[in-house]
Image 1 (cartoon, rainbow, N blue to C red):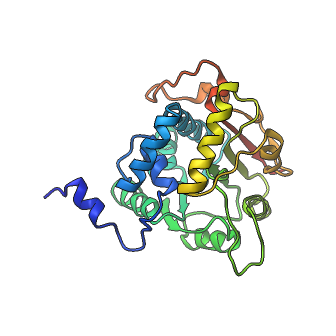
Image 2: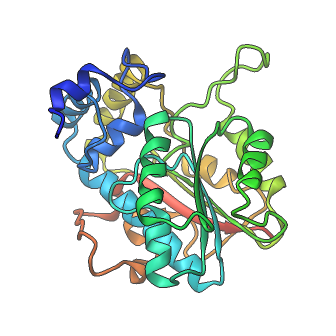
Length: 294
């Protein structure tokens, strides 16, 4: 028997914080997924009322992820770690990979949001391969522990090159734990550790919102958007291009370098994906790139 949406919202799973909208579930709502709760949809509607372009921006970012996976498979990559993977709306990485290289790739999804992990596990149980796919509940801010969790799945050989995907996650502030004694955002330090852990020949893919080089009519909207997230959900950070490039460290950016999502290897788009048109590429607001560890 189907459960009414209002009944689902009345009984969230254990461990779900219903006091604040979840970044992952709100993002799923922008992608027109079905894994959000009433609190997420209410916040999402307020955001979209102020900034309706956020829905196509989110979809363009998802298509960027798909292009990255296809591009890296063509470069010989077979192992992927998707950190902050979110919910499986508009195809997860393993689905894109299996379309291009059936049975030849392995993917481990990691997220801190219990709903995202649960949905990913459900998807993998129905459409995945337990020998090649797994989803774990992990924390981006604890790289060594997360790396061990990935290794413990037995899905990947972490002595061989992997592709680490950090797609639309680092512009969400990563606060240090109260016990660590650190302050502010620990995202860059965490990424630096992932770069150290990755074997030579590995890849790092990042997409990140910026407030630099965007159309002037977005300036006030981005300030308002940040205020809304900082006050109602999770605080966010809009980094400059140089700051985003710094996240790659000594990894060598592959062509075309850091680019607006719509301009990063458009030839790797699938004909089945939605066409997302912007008046200019910088309306996508998100810069993306892929670096390789020398």
